[in-house]
Image 1 (cartoon, rainbow over the protein chains, first blue to last red):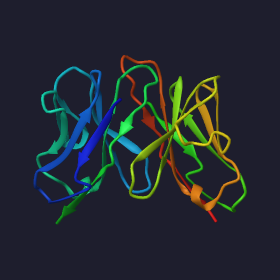
Image 2 (tube, rainbow over the protein chains, first blue to last red):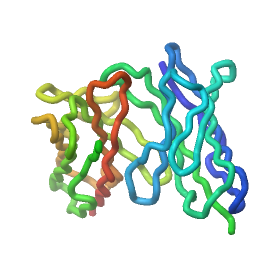
Image 3 (cartoon, rainbow over the protein chains, first blue to last red):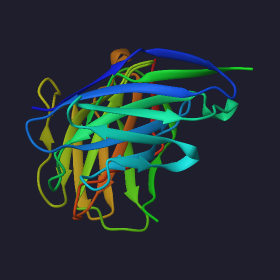
Image 4 (cartoon, chains in turn orange, cyan):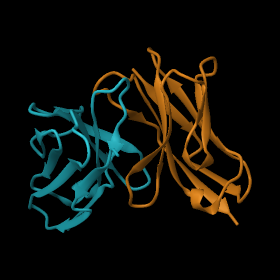
Length: 114
Length: 116
């Protein structure tokens, strides 16, 4: 079985500050890991994905995440927060097989202070 | 590329009526479509997985007779909420995927259902 745990349901940072959203996973097989962003009343947009290639994954909007097998973590970071980054962020895991399920974390709401 | 649409984007209906939500993959053929439900300030919960031309696979606890899923073509899946009640009010999101080296799902914009 696979699962993800997002630490912190709400994170608040100042504009220009480092963004760090934490995600730990559990998987009995090599995982595929994803970060999605959701703006209010909208669907999900893929920020980045790890598919067993490079452990440091760069995504859209300046976000990146590092896969650390020893820590079973896939934390999302951005060096400098922008007001437009305020949204809900979901970490997710799948086993990557055809038609496999994606299991979502509980989400982290990111707020940006002016 | 890989655009998924949903229709309608929002719907209000009376208790006891049925509502159909469409999910379309606009620029690719989706071998598999997924339906999720999201309550306010909560995560997405997978309701069912459907493959074109076959019956949907429902997650535990999801009433298949209440949430009818049809995946008649490689670009269209529908979710029908039958005899809707206020507790069915939610945000419904579909996603679509196809055979790739890894499974990436492309998400629709969601449908807000309000049952009065």
